[in-house]
Image 1 (tube, rainbow, N blue to C red):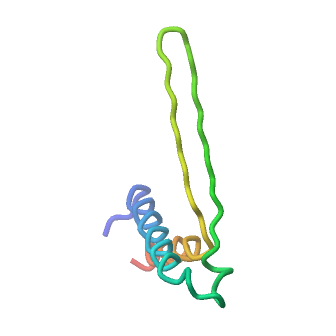
Image 2 (cartoon, rainbow, N blue to C red):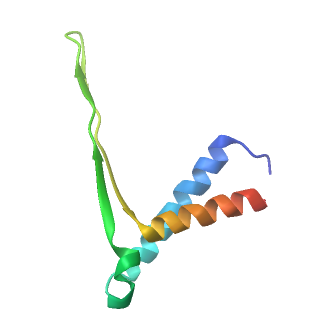
Image 3 (cartoon, rainbow, N blue to C red):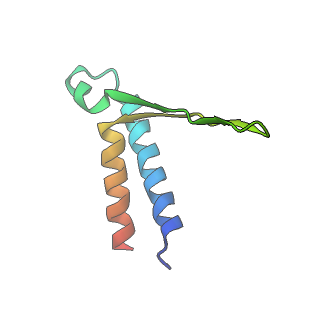
Length: 80
């Protein structure tokens, strides 16, 4: 497989998605609360330039399992 930045980005996004799914499945396990606790990140740039106006909203909930999933995805990408 040809390696490029888009494939790496896809691997990272899929790894984070897999980690988030595992985090949701394990959220009721009290002993694993440190893995499933998430941090909400919100970024909302906007501009009003008199000719046009735009608003962009970005929300992310990042947990330790999603970071582990991204790290495993990078490892898998490097192995291919």
